[in-house]
Image (cartoon, rainbow, N blue to C red; front, side, top):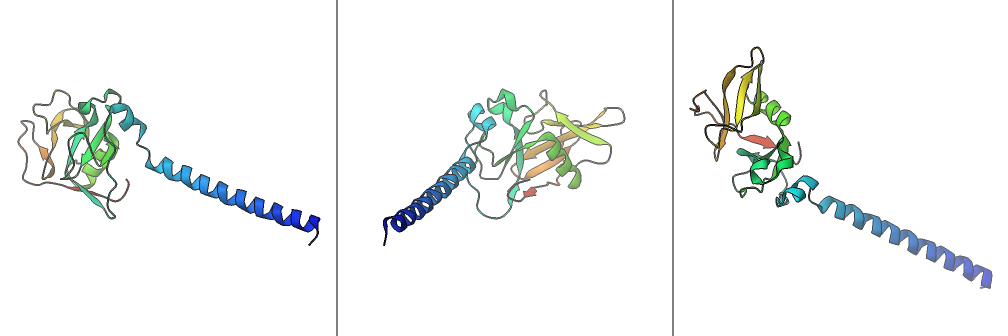
Length: 170
């Protein structure tokens, strides 16, 4: 084997080593990026959701993340499964997403929408239902350990509960 042949062989081995190193490094960075908490949760001091087991999650209640000390997450709602601890939701969603799910599940009718209600008469009922025609109050959306439900203007709820079934991500 000549010196020129050995040099070419060593160059090929070195290129292959560098190539494998770059692939491993890239995969490590990609994996670390997937494991980071969301910036909103990190800034708010809210613990990141625990990794879920495969399959859909059943969310039975919601809570405004701003109640957990996160002023910048006013428009974010935390969705909780039955086993989630306070201020540690399995998933954070927007008000618009929740409104669409409530309409699909029959808790909102055509011509109704929801808005945050910081002055809610009780904590579980923190979404006000309004009509689009005259912005008149039409009731409340409430949640408890059994699911989400619609209450009338006095906060008296129906027996029917809805549990949101969500796959790995909305």
